[in-house]
Structure formats: C-alpha cells, structure tokens
Length: 400
Image (tube, rainbow, N blue to C red):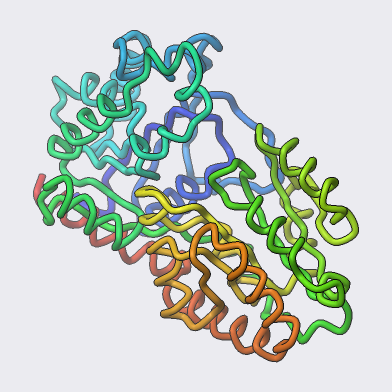
C-alpha cells in the first residue's frame, strides 16, 4: 500500500494558515499519498495558495463549541462529544488508512472516532500544550483558574502518546524530554521539525553590511513570555550614539501590547522601536528585506526549551543574523549553525551588550547570516521534512 495510502489529517483550528500542517501535507503529496484534511474551524482568506491536491473539508462549529467548550476539552468531555461523530464520518467516507491528528486538544475525539476502525494514529504535537497553557491568560484568570487543570491535560497527553502508533515532536530536545521525563518509548517518538515553505527560499541571500541604521526585527505573538520587554529595556540602557544607529521593528500583537507601547513611550524610544502589529505575507517579506538581525528573546520554560519558532527559519532564509535567548533548542541551533549570538533569557544587560557588539562589528552580520542561510538550505527545508515524513509513514504502514 505505502505511497498509495490515504492519509486523514484532523485539525481543530482555523485554516489556512498553518505552516506545519501545510508543509507536512505537501510533502506527503509529493511522496504519492492522498491527503485529506478535516478542519474543525473557520475557513480563512489567505494570500498564498494551498497545494491543489490537498483535499480540505470544513466543519463549521458554533462559537461556544470552538471557544468555550474547547478550552474545557479535558475538564468535561462536551467538546469531544460534539466533534467525534464528524471525525468518525470523515474516516469512513474518505476511506483513510492512517489518521494524522494535529495537536493534543482534539486527540480524545479522534481516538473515540477510531474505536471501530482501529487505524494507525499519528499524534502530531505542535507544542508542549500542558506546559505552555500555564502561561495562557484564560487559564490564569477566573473562571479558567478553577476549571482548567494543566496537570489533567498532561495526564491525557501521556495516555494518548502511549496509545498512538507514533507521537511526533518538533525537536530532538523535545524527543529527549518525552523519553526521559515522560517515559514515552523511544521507538514511539519521531521528530518532524518546523520549517518554511519553498516560497521563502525563492529569495536569494541578500543581506549586506548596513549602510545606514542597523535594523532588528521580531515576528510573532508579543505576549510577556516572548521577552520583548527585555529588548525594550535593553535598548533603553544603550549609549545614545548606539541608539541612533539602530531601529527595532516588532511585527505582531497580543494582550500585552499596551504594556509594551507604554514602556516604549515612557522611555522615549518611539524613534527607534516600532510596534507594527500583524502584517500580511507581503508585509513580512518587505520588512525582512530591510532587516539585519532577527530577534527571539523567549523566556525559558519547558515548552520554549524544546521547540523552534518558525520565525527563526524565516530570519535564516533572508540571511539575517540571529539574536536569541538561551532556550535549549534555539540556542543549540544558533551555536551549531554559527548564525548569531545567544543571551541568557531575561538578561537585559547581555542583550544590550550584544546589540552594541553588532553595531561595532557589522561585518559579522554578513558572516553569520550567510552561515545561517547555508545551514537552512542544507538541513531545514521541505526536502528534509519530506525525507523524515517518508521514514515515519513507511514505518507506520509497514507495521500496520
């Protein structure tokens, strides 16, 4: 059967975009599989086209199911009770051979839906959800604080990791954590790293020594745990002559945005730090073309230590040097690829020192950016993801 197999993916989120889902689906299609994606969420308008051979169908759930019931997915089984019949019908009607479930929240409904069919299940953990949920606002405020137990989510995660045919994680660091801390058998774990689509790599290596201001960029969610307040406070302690040489662009938003803007205004940094909000695909490319250093100052926790943010590969595709915190996975990437500098998470003085160093050693930007770009093309493209997916599916289907 192998490459002629029919893969049923399940995602309970709006779509598109979801780079991980889209990249994995495209790679499987290239390998000759038929891929069907059931989206339990809203259809979004998005600038780029999906793979024309990806079969996508949507279930439009009421908002109370998508928002409130899903947040309580492992407190009461209402969410899974509502959605599992849709998944069961999808499995039967699409005659799939393997179920590929994207992330933990929907997992219980998938296992329920598969009780009769007993198909192989690949549990694709996009993140360490029980850990990262500890930082979510709705989990730390009333009534979520009373109703949502991250320990309960962790117990369900452990159970489904053991029940799944394979559990997919994002990094080698995550694989080690699930093996050593959660006792998931090594042969049940498989690493599929995040990466970027081919469109990003259509842009040739383009970063030169900055002729004017040195431009730093951050892309993504701006919540407190992302460490952007540390960047602001680091810029504030720079000598004025260094401040005049740099600009920091922050593309993204969160509920923490007003605190960031207040701090920028209080420290009189509006001239060199810009909060630009969410940008579309073209806007992201435009700002990357104008930048020299990519920022990822995440605070440390078990989730951040074991994952890669997509922004890292976007930076590398544009030949930017990387300035990142010492969360294990991203620090290891930067050191291995010799593509940037690492600071201790939250260490404002270290961040300021590295910014100053870049302003004085601008040739290093080109050297580090070139090294990162080369490493990306060699190890972190869709072709490497495709090879890893092929190994995963060969092992699952041969076992079946």
